[in-house]
Image (tube, rainbow, N blue to C red; front, side):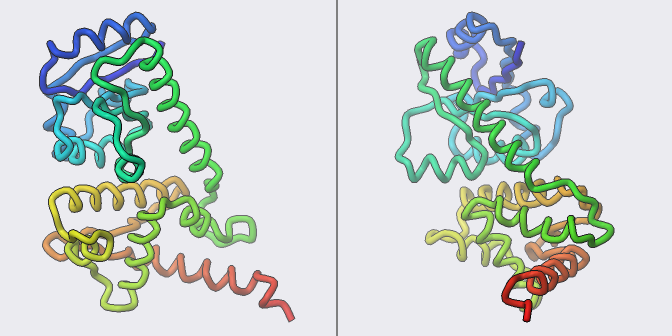
Length: 253
């Protein structure tokens, strides 16, 4: 039996959805109390019990954006209840961690297929992450060479833009402010929504590199100043780039 967590502002309003989930043989917990702690970035052991999280339509978009950075740290399929969105908006939400959408009053078939699709997308992400390789980082071997570059290839378009900009900043003073990053990524610059998206992107980049068993920090947060790459990580990255250049066919005479 799979377990579903519904995050809502009104537990009573979720009764029809809860009944449908029970009909489909899902075990369900409906909570309003967890919203605030997740928005504040506090991790809770209870979240690890669940396979899926459904964010209710009673939770606003700005509140959902605050939830996603913390939820993205767990192996969860995340579903948003709401109206259908244009493809471009869906892509932006998917980058933040939403796997699927369902309407307020879905049919049993729509709900069943939506849950299955969300789980499938989560499994695809896990497979992709596992293919990144789990080599120890302490020594550079021929087999392990390029592991960080493999992680880099797994990034979404926006994650790649953030990471590449941090690389650029490392040789131009080191620190990038949140304002500078927001203005680099989005036309409307530093808004509360974009700040929340940026936090989510930084967390996702960290998690993907941490899956390589890296023991030191990846990105350092300097409160009041911004972000910078950890120096040990940056040196490891440069070493891999040099190895890749040496191993490329163009370097062989």
